[in-house]
Image (tube, rainbow, N blue to C red; front, side, top):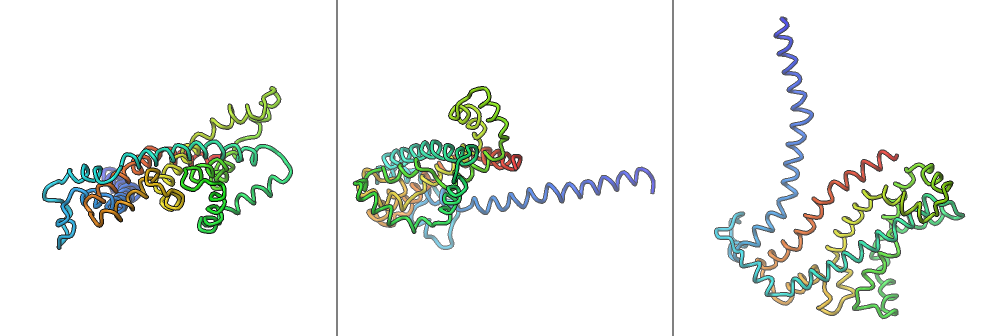
Length: 289
């Protein structure tokens, strides 16, 4: 075999290796992504159809004429913006609560030595396995006796008491941060709160951003919490409002699809915005390990 033939064979092997290791996985993942994206595309296209087109056989993916008026009719059929404002209020309040409570508890469990720290962490970790259905009735009884039913307090106050998953996540990050940083600050006369605020908290920005996105997703899509505690329609969130719209106006699917599209859109935007923070948090956790 000549040198030119050897180079040509090497190029073919390199091309085949590149195709196998990079191109094919990307093509496969793109196809999987399209499959998962299809329900949202189907939802959006149905929001632009007439009722006859939605139930036509055989089903048509693309509408003959785009019915943008469905969105205006959906706004007129229910106080959509009021529901959105109520939901955003709960989202912001819960994000503030989780970002305030979880880092403080995680820091005390990871960086401050005190008797019973391991037992307390085990107790916190044990609550992760409890399904929400187990605590739903006892919590409702407590909030009812406090007079908090039909207010936002039952949906906000628990976030300021710490989430076991968030505490566990932040504690794992803090355990990976060298103790020499806090020890050096103590030698320089820094208080415990100053060490937490100026040294540890800035290092937790990626996981805190991920927690904020998780909280946004959870509160924005929460249905049972607002349904249980909020009886006044003026306090309803958008998820409960959509269910109320379905009960009051019947199966006007084109309007329901339009409202559901607007309901889903913020979650998609939040995911794409927070995608880099998920990656940073995962990478940082692996590095600390």
